[in-house]
Image 1: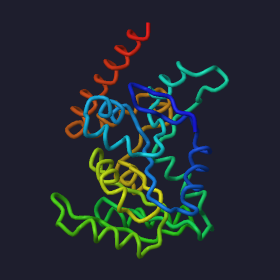
Image 2: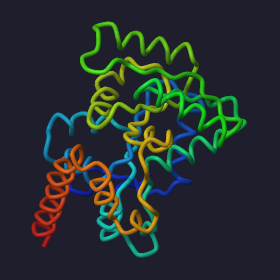
Image 3: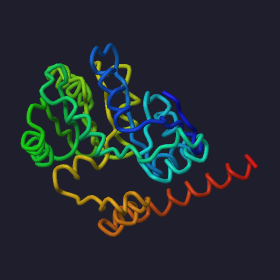
Length: 253
């Protein structure tokens, strides 16, 4: 799959259909763990700015453009006929993948992360809105510092479930570091760093309206909804993204 570098992060030139096709192909006969990330400007800025996060993301196999600013940056480097018309939004990618596996027993899903109550709401959501989808297992790890044997417990739960599509909602950057650091030991399957998708689909956090998302302003909606938690993150990383983008553009000129 063709990739385009945006402030150093290689992003796949794909849409939902192409991403889901690639994911299901990888999950159909997995021999190793494969890592997928839906990257927004926050992820891209961290990749450029933080060497440890860059090391983790370099172990991912597919990184799709979750944010519209990333799509706009990619399109500046693409021929008109190849330009992307939309982003590959992580929560929607999750739904598209889930829907594509309905009544296909060879695909089994595992939900890792979040509170037990969130996971129960997610399971209910998928059973109600996506019948025929196999949720093979869920696991809520402890908050804070994990016990020394926690990873082994998680690996055993995933293996026991037979899942080949594993959704990891530990929050960014914890989920990316965890997938990368354990990739060589994880049970075979496709692992997704999925961020806030669990809370969205469980109905615990509202998503921005479509017109806000299309115009690249979801960050403003999220800040308004959760200012204390998200203001610093978006202020710092959106500024870094703009700074690195401008600096790279000046260098190219």
